[in-house]
Image 1: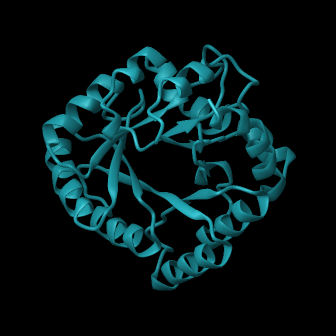
Image 2: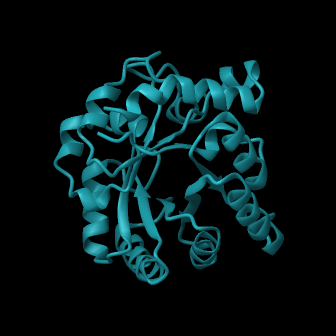
Image 3: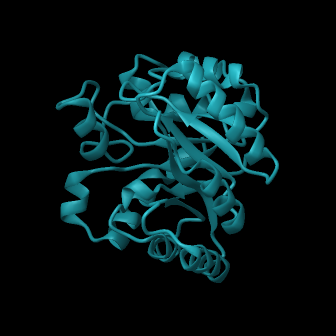
Length: 255
């Protein structure tokens, strides 16, 4: 069985610019990478620079993140155009402070636009977000009714919301283009925000059922490794951090 595509999530190396993350991911040996969108700093030069860096290194852009869908608006259409321009097949979306009917309507609009340019908008869930768990995310995506939508499972958020690998195994494979991976303690050792942004662990260093989770996935589902760790950021420069995370994750790709 061929190995799954592995991608370095932008959150693992948050200090890097989009062009820098492509270079670091390639040098560390990753076949793909994610990209972080900052609406205040991303411009046409950024798009051209990222596209050039991807072409020069030969690695793929798995996703662009995040579309923060809020009552006050978002950068969704702009991000869809950027994703299409750089060749990122997925856009990570999160609902924040928005009620379900408005989120459903907005996702329908974004999904239809994304489908027209070969991009998928993947809705992430978690206890900190408008969609708190897998069932609520599936419900919102289903009611939005667009072929350009999917659900993004993050191993940490799945566990913290009470979900399991068995829950993921029952999801329509078409809704799972990629999944975010990390390890963690069985229970949070801090508040949920710090748990998600600073306390993630290398695969195999924690207590999440990662092997079971990956085994429950469709064969085509890529793994984006989001290793947000204050300890790793303090101990390792971005390139060495990227290498360490890849080494710790490789065994999952062949499950």
